[in-house]
Amino acid sequence: MLLEASDLVGGYGGNDVLQGVSLAVDAGEIAVVVGPNGAGKSTALKALFGLVGLRAGCVLLDGHEVTGWAPERLVAAGMGFVPQERNVFPTLTVEENLEMGAYLRRDGIARAKEAVWALFPDLVAKRRQAAGELSGGQRQMVAIGRALMMAPRLLLLDEPTAGLSPKVMDEILERVQAINATGVGILMVEQNARAALAVAHRGYVLQTGRNRFTGTGPELLADREVALAFLGG
Amino acid sequence: MLLDFVNFYLIPGLVLGCIYALGAIGVSLLFGILRFAHFAHGDLMTVGAYLALLLVRVAGLAPIVALPAAAVGTALLAVLIDRAAYRPFREKQTIVLVIASFGVALMLRSLVQLLGGVGSVAYVPGIQRPLVLFDSLRIAERHLWIIGVSALLVVVLHLFLSRSRTGKAMRAMSDERDLARIAGIDTERVVVWTWLIGGGLAAAAGVFLGMDTQLNPYMGWDLLLPVFAAAILGGIGRPYGAILGGLVIGLAEELATYPWIGTTPLVSPDYKTAVAFAIMVAMLIWRPTGLLRGRQFG
Image (cartoon, rainbow over all chains, first blue to last red; front, top):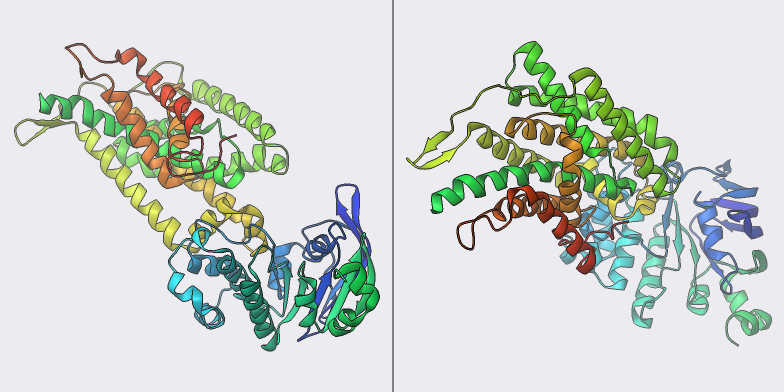
């Protein structure tokens, strides 16, 4: 397994949002986490990335324990994280945003930059523009591009399509699949559950801080109970 | 008439503006990175000015020649102060850091008083004759140095912030601190650089103020109001705004004393500082994010 998190318990302050969540992603897979508001989806992602304190549980990256590691250490170990909000540096140009993603890299970053331009050709013309001036979809592209600059093996995405129009949402999900096709494992929290599960190799439904259903994306989409309770019928 | 305006109002205004700008850049950068108003910044300027005085007295250097060493010394001191007095409170509420910086301000001032005396001193005693350019443009040599070196420092700062990896990381952290950590930026390293730059520029401001007038242990503390006004005017967290804000405040203070109407000064020179205060209050009421849309202050 690329990433294996078991029985995570933790949250903000004394309030345990997570009450035993387990998630896993294998190399080259897309895993999607869905569930109602307050289920702990985003908290789980942040806890994996060392941004939320864990009281119990274990996180393994490639079989090595990384529980409680600081974000910068996880970045160096091959994990990338794209938060849902405030995920670009607004006064920095698009290109500078990408350079910041490669801050820890000591080797050349030209090739990583070329790969991002190839993935998001729309950004090339905007490379010298401040990221804060871009549209929501383009900002999301910058945010994902920034995380790709370290050539991570695993990418955590927190609601990458939140607030985007259906057309842009499809575009982002299609790009996420393209990233996955290059061998990057994806763990994604999504509010647009149907669209996200449709591209998922592995799906998790969380409820009140616990795993509720687990299966492949198509299995969860076909499950009557899941559909009724979590996908709006 | 025009020459009088240039010689006695415009040039002194520019000089004052440079001094304010150098102080305000540090205040603004520090606020962007650490999210607190650094009230010991004025006293860092004083320390810089007195370090240069030490070199002037001991090694017989000209103040402008002593400046680089004084700036390096002040910059290192700023990093040490951060380690001892601010870093332990990094994750605490902002007000804790603000109060800590008040304490540091008092300690620095007392140290200066203890080692440098409580009275006023000058780098070079006596009156210096101004240079006369084009027959009628009179400008003191020290003013040329102040304006020239300030411009140089601003250009170097610009290159640092726009070209270097650390400078870009500094802007990134000022934009979004959490995202900077997520991106893997070494935020403590950025903090150290911010203190080095803020401290070095504060020392330059202090030395320039000492060259322009005199040194006394309260010189930096007295400058805190216009320096904060400049940082707020420019947009807190925006170093380029701080430069603009410093120049505007410096010029406004000097030009307000020009006899615009009639033959007496529009604002009595005794009330010069009130001009900075008025501008700061007006900005906080009508445009608290500053000219360059910085962060809301406080």
